[in-house]
Image (cartoon, rainbow, N blue to C red):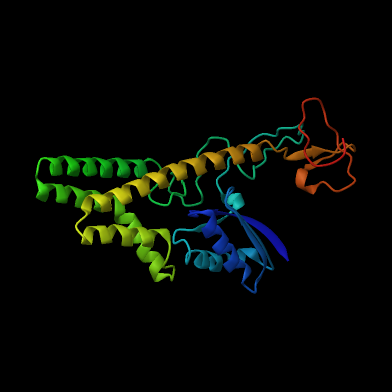
Length: 270
């Protein structure tokens, strides 16, 4: 059996990660699988993990349609120097990089990638601002008695804000995931339109999108802090024998040299 770590991109939430992990563990070819949502890592133990990537991706996309599973080594990390007393003269990759450089997850498009539920980066905020402006215009038009134009403004706001939610609900419905939040939000908002409450329909979607936007920002910040903490981890250790080895290769009983200012690389007795 071989164990390999991959980067899993475009995961919607921790609950989706748990569903995908359960599906992976149900495969006969997989001895064990674990997904760490915070660091976007998939750890697979199997006879030939690389041969399973295509199958695992297809399974993951039944839960999240845009999931990508990429080798960790191809995750686009740039080389960095050592931290603690490495004398080997080579650069090493970080398991989780917080170097503030662009990381291109093997797609070749040259842009940054962020796993937002609806949209990417600033485009999400722009969609919400446009929808909010149309929503406000609808209220203004309604207040001056222009009901036809106010309804048109509300309909335009709904089309802007709800398009991706409706699309996600349809995709999930086709994959057998009925009672998810996208489906419920679609039913609630469309129901409000059907009973003539266009403003309420748009309001529901607008505040939902705002909540999602701030949640994604908070998750991204938390992930960045986690990756920064991982980045502080010493990558190599200096043995008493004078040899420098990767930290993960250290064995119980090894005696390490810690110089002034070095971080403690492993759990042990100082």
